[in-house]
Image (cartoon, rainbow, N blue to C red; front, side, top):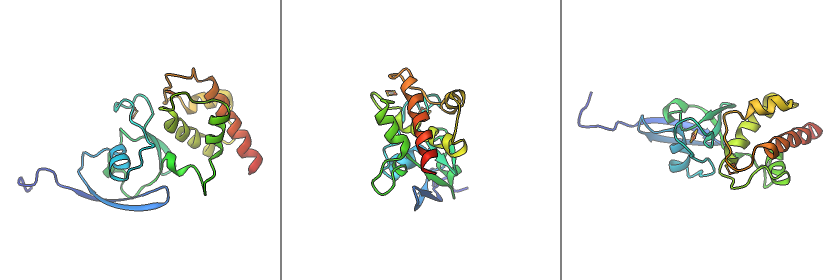
Length: 165
Ligand code: FES
Ligand code: FES
């Protein structure tokens, strides 16, 4: 081991919202830091840094992960989707529209994580029950809304997506 090099860097590559990126990163770099600080995708929020709030949730290979809990090197080779990747060709994702129409947000700090957890839920289960919606976002905290309008928004988005498919 070369002790003159205290911060060895590791080459990684990730695809984020369909765009391929290659970086050399410190082994301790968190995935959320890679996303926000290296790739400038600041839609992913940091609320606690301790795996508690879910504001940093992104999809890694289709699974929701709290990106403050994943090292960037663990995501090497991965396919990542962030909140910036929800809209397509200038059109909001049905979840984004439903959160807006049903007042599923107030300050909006939790919203990117809520949207990504909901997106993972609806990808797996297009017709979730109320209980399944609650389970789907159980790792995401909101200090503003009381959750009821978030549940309504996810349910409305699910219905909208079923009609379109
Ligand atoms: S910032 Fe990751 S769970 Fe709160
Ligand atoms: S809208 Fe403010 S934390 Fe959820």
